[in-house]
Length: 292
Image 1: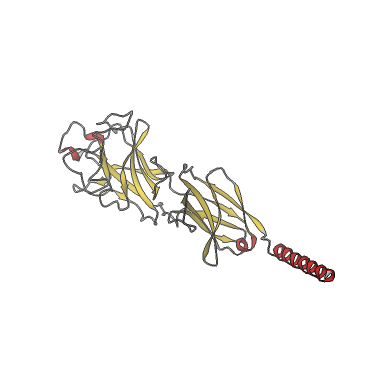
Image 2: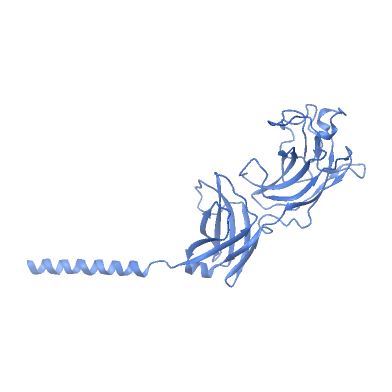
């Protein structure tokens, strides 16, 4: 009986040794992935950035982050990292029930050897040919000529007939355009849109516009009533700045996002109902390097 007990204990010991050996053999080897990106802004409490490597055509997360101080280092499965063909950066909800990448992709690039050069052109749009025109006018009040400098409309009427004023590329999924007037240092939205040849999304519901109509069928806004705290409407947009931004969908903040492909300070001597040319904005591309 004692002999049988000893043999049983020895068998259990061999089983334990065997399991321990298997665990050691299956230990994942990790390697470093280093992100060095420029132009990203903090997303606030509700959203984070998440990196992904593409392995055999499928996304594999490399980790989430909220700090925009770079470089940043992440530990990734060495085998997967070595076989990765590309890197993609997304914007994700902080509380995210979906384990896969969100539609809002912001940067990407293919690996060549130990590094990938990444930028926003493929995942957002290429703004190298972006151009814009606008007029100052307040058509939603039915023709009151005393406040014409209090509205901005992104159209071109230089031919005598209004046509589309913004030349902008189609955006990838997860992004939308938004117009802004920076009034005495406060950015006030003119509305979001994806097609610059039609009215923006809040054309019929804006709380700022006049009560007579919704204005022309192009993006824009009349700042005539219900001014945000600290501002007074009607206003005078001469000397202020108008901006076109690209915003994530869903939007991470009520403030303008980091992408600003078009911007222009309205001339102090601008004439109402007269076409004004916009210029390039302060940031139309994000880029960086990813090293493995």
